[in-house]
Amino acid sequence: MPDVHAVILAGGSGTRFWPASRRSRPKQLLALAGSSGESLIAATVRRLHPLIEPRDVWVATSTGLLEATALALPQVPRAHLLAEPVARNTAAPIGWAAAVIARQNPDAILVVLPADHFIADEGAFRAVLTRAIHTAEQGWLTTIGVSPTRPETGYGYIELGNLLGEGAHGVTHFVEKPDRARAEGFLSGGRHLWNAGMFVFRARVMLESIGRHLPPLAAGLAALDAAAERGEEGRALAEVFPTLPSISIDHGVMEKADRVAVVPGTFGWNDVGSWEVAWELARHDVDGNALPEGTVAVDSANNLVKDLTTGRKRRIALLGVSDLVVVETDDAVLVMPRSRAQDVRAVVEELSRRGANEEL
Image 1 (cartoon, rainbow, N blue to C red):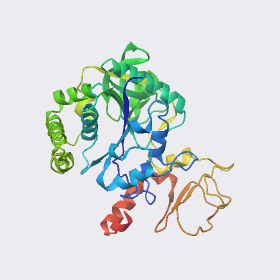
Image 2: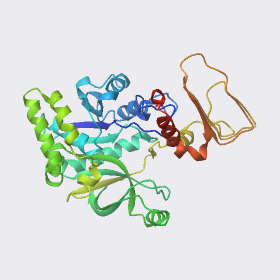
Image 3: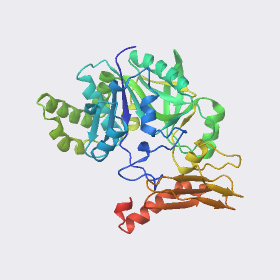
Image 4: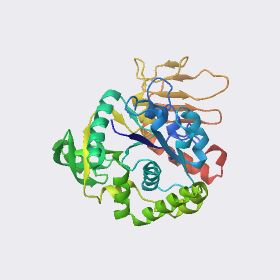
């Protein structure tokens, strides 16, 4: 294998998993999928073994999440936690990570992954990742596309181009989130993949592409490089990072670059986007309930209960209810129909309106 590094994007502060997720504890730090109690970000790092060891993992997060991220990933070197002073979408942290790694090896391969996804078939995922690494070695900006299983309107898509070899294709187009009819056409046509936000490339190739397509970001990264040579990168970050363009790597670079490839994969991918998805991924009893040990469920089916309290546990009982989400933390309880899982942010917005900042 070449010199390969993983860059985990972990700066999000999503609202869709309130009350479990908070500004200081976003979903990547929670155990929302699988049965091991492992946080999503810890699983993201672990499943890379043996392709990429923790010593070669970098994490782009925010200054406010730095300590919590370090606690969740004790095996990752502290110096590899890149703390963004402000959020600037994905192009800026990816570019910064590429610049930092390129100072040691411009030809290093970077594998960029979101911190908060679930993958069921980890062996198949590593096989796809290996093909993507080999494609990136040849100078391609490479992305991993997930073979769609339904006409999903909530994801972007990647249109397959010509076969390049080793399971990789050129990319014809990146497609924004489609309407239902178009998504159905993508599914039946077999030429489109879900855009899962996973990228593989040589550091210098990405930096060259940023210079060509995002000059303001390239200028900011050059300023950080110069500051790093003086031993002043930490101080320069506070001045430079807020001036960087807030744009995704897709819009800023990938959609404009010439040599872009995609490696298709099927490995049980899920972006864990709501409590409904958490129920789908959980272990169910014979009635479809996903419950903590000791929960009493009478004439109840297809419910998700999460007891996330840290003190003395209380008995939770369900009677004659179906398709609910019940989440209890030390300071809040959420009860809603599973069908309203995408609307949790409305609760967060109402709490914000009331000034209940300690609960956000």
